[in-house]
Length: 492
Ligand code: ADP
Image (cartoon, rainbow, N blue to C red; front, side, top):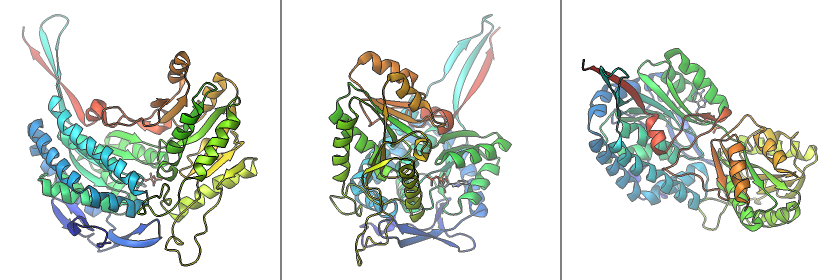
């Protein structure tokens, strides 16, 4: 691994607590695997409740001083972190690819989005302002202050090993909160490199702490602690529900970014070429492993055949391989179990009548290939998909694009909304009034109209229904880390 990374000090493999690099108390270790080869690349501490409690204590001790510093000072320190991280772009993006499998070009894209959050929140925190209100009888004035919520527990997934951290830690620190972060057990190295850079940037010790290891034990320790006032989580709906239930005992604030089941509607007046490009990019990004990936393509019957022909050609042209090789447009999945799950859903669809237009199997690399042990699945297009198939209702989280047919706007909108999820939805049309009508009727937190690049640090990101609570990014994302306090002044 050290051959891949120029600045070897970025390769941290211990917990970062109170500014110290420490092992798990019992010395247990967790293996980090390169999904392109199936080989172990590092070990990190398999920590549990004790290490988490120590990190919470550090974060709680630092909260008062950090929270009371002027926002401009906190912003200046965050900007130093931003500068350190930007300077480490090559190493960090290689680490991201090594532990998550995504192609380097995608790691770079995620990196650029992720550092933008650090800079934006560093600036935005200085613009926090409250309200002054007059009581109806004129005898009092109310001042509404915005104060940091306190210690934040952050739990992040592997599919965006970098930006899911920066979009939680940056607003939290900017608002004046301190953080205990648990990164995904699959991608802890990117997180620990960010801690090393935070240390170099002079983020005070104990303000940002990172504990790697046993998800359940760390999660429970965060939930049980009365010192932790908020949990910010990105991951599956199942775990989000556990966290919400666990947070009830101490009435924690929660921001939950959970699963999605994004529809992509291609209306009969869509620009089919542009729609195909958008579907491929949204459905195969990170091998289909993002919560806003297109999961269901709904195509009007009038353009269905032309659309499918163009889509199949484009998906067949994707190049499967190691993310470190230039020219790779699709990397491996995160684990062997992830490949099994995708395979099961494809088999279920085929058994229920879907046709494989391309892909539909694991690749065979041939003996001796370094990728033979990797977790790959071929880019796949399925046609004739129907709503009785598992993949209509469940997240695919794989490089599979199923195409469903519809014949009216009402049918398309009903199919799109026929899910427990409500994160992102996309549609292509050139009719302005249809665009407006459909955007309003889709039960989703984010809607892309003739566009799939729907995320930005300036715009709120989040879902409705069982896709989550709260918003990240934007001024709304900063507000998630602030409590309102009403100060009433009698002037009678
Ligand atoms: P995914 O399917 O994307 O891996 P998960 O919800 O399993 O989604 O994982 C997202 C994050 O939640 C990871 O950091 C994982 O370790 C963590 N996690 C998983 N189970 C729990 C749990 N019981 N309590 C707290 N965190 C958990």
